[in-house]
Image (cartoon, rainbow, N blue to C red; front, side):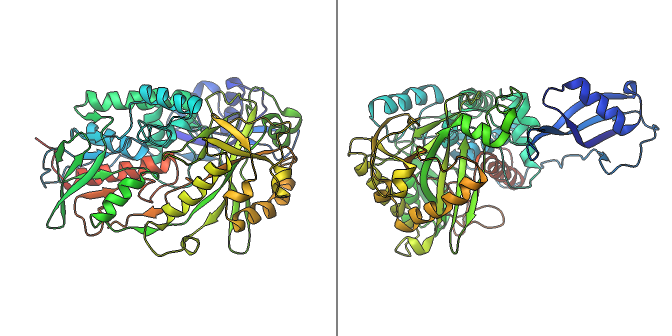
Length: 528
């Protein structure tokens, strides 16, 4: 019989033996009656400093017939058979094609490959090894490759991030995502930590391993291959034209193109694909000393090796907007993330160890269609471009990101650097960030700051450093789709993941890709 034990509480220095002891106490049986004890979830309870504790849920097996005490923290885990995927009977012309190797694209491809569908996957960017070289060249020299950068290439935008695997969605496929990432090289802890992360250094290897598995199963992955047009016949998709002048004939296309594929959005729009405006958020990256965040969150336990670098999540609801932290990167870097010339875009990135000097997070404010200035479905893209180009101008029109001390930002002056040194991967220039964001955004950020400083002591420190601008928090569009995940009015086109407006992070994008793969399998026969 398999059991789940909840609310197992230990100190920071306790190990496996203490977990076994507490499991025995909760079950009121002898240790030799317990086998296969496994951590299911681990979270940190830092509410009562300095008494910080770990809270576990663990699974174990016991022999049938052993009496279990009546305890709400003990639950029998019943084995649930996974519903088989039975292939449909419709025929695929050629092979299914996936555009994009971000989480939604790669997981869609993996599931299809595991079921014998041998997908073709294309990506405008390079494979991860070459992509890393090009990205580092941009960071060092300011020379941008518009097809291979932090937004485009193997693994998608998430490759140069913290590799966060937290999500708000409640879907059993989330476990599949974690298990597959673990199988391809992610650390064991992603299977049980309440806030799992891989780290960009490890995630690069993981996505490469996933690609090689897809190829081993008969799939084909083509890098440096951009979709530049689609072929349509009688309202149905029948092929994709690439910039290598090759036409890929297929009636099943998954558009997992990411939130920054602006030219691809425009191409699809011009071909009759429907788009809707979608809210997102814009703002800056804010940096603090990681030691300050550790102390604010963990008090005297700050620096304990079992805790690692502390994170945070902040929200401040205002009359018609919300200011909040987003994509917090403990011990990380602020990343130069542009995908178009003459623009500045920021993001955050942490490696697995999260051991850099600064903590950084997006500090952003919600915006929506009423801010975009026009009802055009792609107006959110132009709205983003305005502020990215103003940030480029504020940085001296030389690919320097504008940076500003928090005190100077609050007082609307450029100022200079203080004790917090830029953790930006490119070059920076002191400037007034108030000049490269809408006033209603900067006003909301300023209003929220006092509240944030109460939540995290020191958050409002004068020398906290802002780097502009963060505009790619999520897709500015949504491509409407029907109950079978196909684009409305365009049979055979499956909009997927964050770029299509159906996800908000690595896990939710991956889950969306899995759902679409499963739908394709249910609909179509295995290609011959």
